[in-house]
Image (cartoon, rainbow, N blue to C red):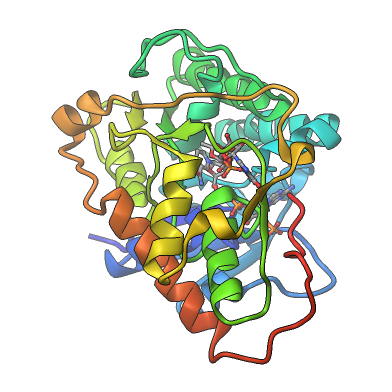
Length: 335
Ligand code: NAP
Ligand code: F7E
């Protein structure tokens, strides 16, 4: 059989890098799509240099997407690129809609025009459940997004379903709950906390400012979740799947575990900053991945505690040896 080819949009992001690791291990030819930038932003895929092909295209530019697929002729397209940080979606709601919502249509149009046999994965999100209408959330739970990001993801989800039903394209929507790793962006709460713990432990900071400590999320490990993306595209029929651990934890518990791992008491360091509380919050997410377990044979492997401890350990190593403490400053991260 010939080598399968996959295009990954968002290759420089957390999930793009884990999916590239996974597909290369399976023997795929992997082509990562990057947007043009004045400086390279390849830290997460540095270890894959020479193994990956990189092509420039942008979710805002229809022609670049068509040309990318014409040139590469992939069997699978994983659409992971988006403006993915929820608070930024209130600051830049129109741009978020362009990337995260209309960008999906542009990718699907490129698939429709170039090769309708391409198998397409859309990175949908538990943020679509927002003000959750039931607990736990399944593929049938009504959607009630609570941010411009969540609204844009609802559009991306339904346009994926629509291209499947309108044109018979093998298009799947993976409704993934929060998933984290040492490669997570530092503005997201898990990494903000584990990076903060490492900086406090090494004497580089004394405080960590956070917003809502009572918000609850179903947090899993990104390395486990990219396998589910691939499994969806290997099935006889396209469908939509919830991917989650089934457990929910509060931000407060995340702090307890992360600070304890470094021998610290979180209550001595965490301060609540009302500016970090969101205009509309998603209070409780807890997914039910029964369908994915039954149909795909997928299982999460890393527990919440293992995940947070893995992230603290990686940040402690990255921040490095103890250095003299600075003045009574706060962490720089304001998100
Ligand atoms: P991430 O780390 O923020 O990565 C986002 C990627 O999108 C980056 O590679 C970014 O490129 C790229 N991108 C943004 N705008 C683009 C544009 N106009 N053209 C081309 N590329 C563009 O996100 P992630 O955590 O890996 O998440 C992957 C996807 O899953 C996203 O769609 C996210 O919304 C969704 N999702 C994530 C989670 C989660 O918990 N991680 C859960 C559910 C769904 P630059 O490096 O150039 O910025
Ligand atoms: O917030 C609370 C915050 O920014 C989680 C994205 O990958 O997952 C992610 O979206 C919770 C929220 O992730 C801070 O209010 C408290 O309730 O880590 P987060 P998110 O908004 O859930 C979904 C599934 C996606 O699809 C998104 O792309 O933590 N929180 N204090 C804080 N959050 C942040 N960022 N910073 C704080 O200081």
